[in-house]
Length: 82
Image (cartoon, rainbow, N blue to C red):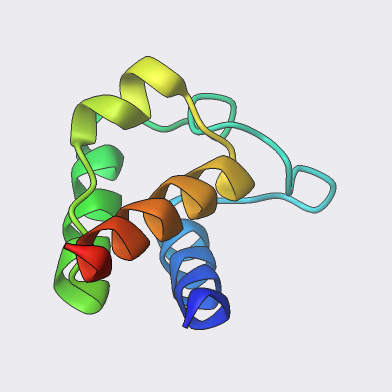
């Protein structure tokens, strides 16, 4: 399941943010992330994967893709364990 989550989050990340070649490890802000893109990413992850991501986390943590995937995967595992 986690590889499916990772793949889908990567698709969402790349669809919302422009990720130039060589910038695959760039953070949300380095890729020009702003409030509307944070809302788009969080809402698509929630709609498509049923994982709730706090929009504020994108601003406070300024994650790169790998960090966002780890966070979302952990939230999905916590939710399934509850």
